[in-house]
Length: 193
Image (cartoon, rainbow, N blue to C red; front, top):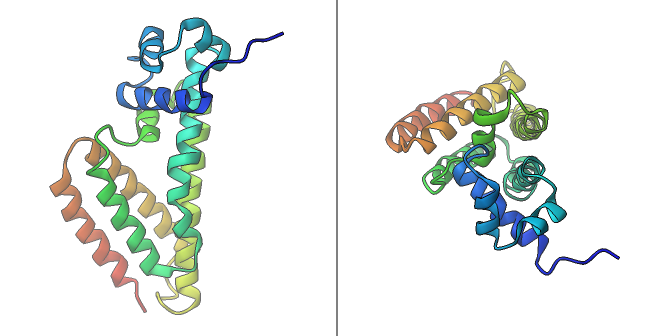
């Protein structure tokens, strides 16, 4: 009969996610995980498998519990104002995320060598694109923005801008982000009918 673990699996997963987020995959050792999670090696391997499996599960947890819920406002008929509000809150978050975005960090560290990381990142990008496109298409349908606007093309442009904002946020380039956001905001406002 298998022994049940004497700790909260999700709580330890969050701790692992935070450690990977701060240090990255390569710089985080099994010894670091054991120490940070406060469990022994056997429990770590028995509960999560190996380091890579734990990393992947941490990344999935981050996407599902942190990133995707922030997209919820983007699935409403909030039009251009909703897009602007989302990007503005996204810009503000960058100043609070000392270690940047965990998914962005994973992209930079492991996307070439890890198909699971690539899949999680594609899920994030698809969610962002869907949210932007939905709201821009809605804005177009109600005459809020001009009919010439290609909502998917603009959505892709906004996704590209957000990735730049993430990198600049991690680098602490907040003044650059603020100035660039003003230009981006002006561009979006210029789409109004």
